[in-house]
Image 1: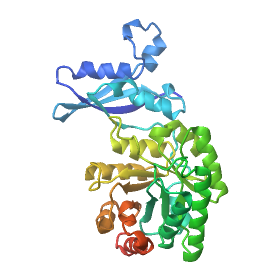
Image 2 (image 1 turned 120 degrees about the vertical axis):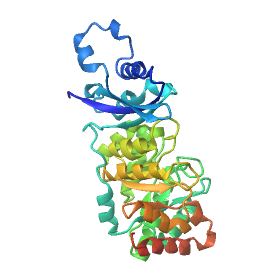
Image 3 (image 1 turned 90 degrees about the vertical axis):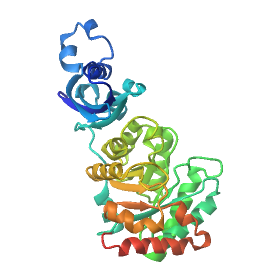
Length: 358
């Protein structure tokens, strides 16, 4: 595939040095060797990165746009991340800010439209909660899921810390929770979805996902920055009817703008739902970052899922900010209700359903 795609970096530099610094990034992210040592004309013309623009953004930071060859990516998401920010991520004066996505990655096989159709949810935001804390035995986890589902929530997901631990092996947890949620759904008439967390290597996640499908599930979650973005792409291709939710764990470990990583790249690689820490919770994203992140996700028909310390008291505020094409994920605040979890889940579901914008 011929052509180039453009990558934007925010670079700290003085005015005198920014042009040389930009050329250095273009070389590092393409051939990572002295240009003078290259004697192949095709490499020089087609592969070496080019500086397309340098614009000041204030406070000693410049937006540097680099053109990179699409041929260097193939169709591998991991190699794409390598070309975007591989070696340059080791240089602390640079933030990966944005990319004009090449048409190599098609986005989620099933996204926001599929979720609305499957749950018969129109004109409002989705509701969800998480199964916590890890350490509980399978039977208690399943009982908790059933109480949430009886409250009429749309989604109940595993906490991302749930993996294949001794106290909650995936082979036991997934069928038990799936059965409990299905039982509650038959009672309420609302088809609540259980989202199991996938973990381990690709073969392990593939096996867990097959088990989930055998249990009648059509959603699952993984943390692509831990499992690998190439694993996300592979699972999306192998299980096209399953909506994959991307958890942001380890997503703050590199200098990549969250609206790019969580809002654009992971949905482009196949995540139909993008979980991210919303402003006002226990993480530090700004409202502007959250707004851009949600817009990027919707651009791929992916569901933005603000989380991280959300509370029932903020339901109207969050819906006013994000609008109806959103899932509100409230975990610990609902769990505080203890024996009244089902009632609090019902209250949460009603607050979203009755909201004028949700």
